[in-house]
Length: 429
Ligand SMILES: *Cc1c(COP(=O)(O)O)cnc(C)c1O
Image 1 (cartoon, rainbow, N blue to C red):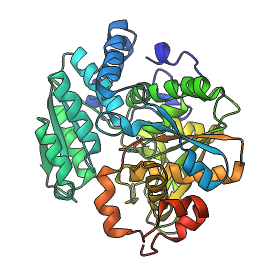
Image 2: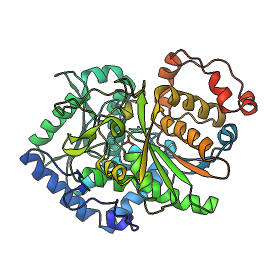
Image 3: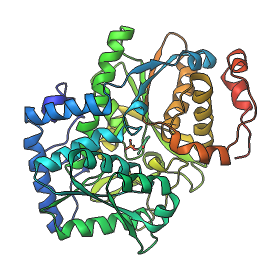
């Protein structure tokens, strides 16, 4: 698909045939898994050039997901901030409420073409599990989701969703009973029957071909957004912004703009409780090079090269590493990687809700928060496009409980501006 979809290929829009973006990526897996991954890579290479596959995916994107997602000009937010105009790419309006359905459909469609009977994956907070279970239900494949016992308890609504959709949720009781153990259990199950099953990774991470494949499926975001901005605004944005966990929604947007040298690009990592604490997941800023989960990237590690526990208020950003293409774009200095704290993300969460009637996911709130800072900095007459990766329904109980907002009338927001509005968010955090 890299050749069919990304017609404008930038040198940064690789990988090479072994899955390398510069020195990052590759495939560092046990011999048995390597053969399996080579199979998937070969199948993807072939199927992604098949026009009937691309047609089928396009039709699902349109009739099932609801693509193209619109671009919305956030006029009231922009006015309150008093700087550049802020635009939102509305991935929150997709079926299932986030960008993850874009690659879930692609992966399950590929699985079906490869003759697989079952898709398997791990999930932490359950967002990837739900997207995959949705695509599996749609396309009639079995779906096994491995989830740590701790997460199964914590994320009850998503567990119910997966079960209602017909997926089997396997509670992993070994070790710390969280995501890491779920990954191990899922890979072991995969190796038991790599012929009938396929492992579906939930971001642009893991061994080749996943960083390339997931990027290709997500690149629809940027392709649409570039056209939409040209058509409705008559020009490209001056800057584009997206949050970065593993990096799939971000690279989906960025890949269409890499050749547009006048478009500044910002990837926003979670600074959690602060970069000077150990409660963050800013892999680019605080990580070192090494091998994590089968690929080379910057990741947060101890002196022995073992991944350290990471943290973010947004469970989707809570990952110690970052996709290899992002690492390459970082070193090329094509993309600026910045960070936003929990607190700043919550402020943006409330601001967008109150000023535009859009409740963003806490992940996406990181991107909105940085866009606001940038809008003040680059000033009036400029345009900033933000990828609103998902909706915040999943986060409302948590936010109300932990970050209650004091009474504040929407009209006052407009009168007093953004900073005044922020001062009315209770400082309980
Ligand atoms: C999972 C998730 C993310 C983070 O994943 P990326 O691969 O970095 O895009 C961001 N936003 C939402 C809404 C998510 O569900």
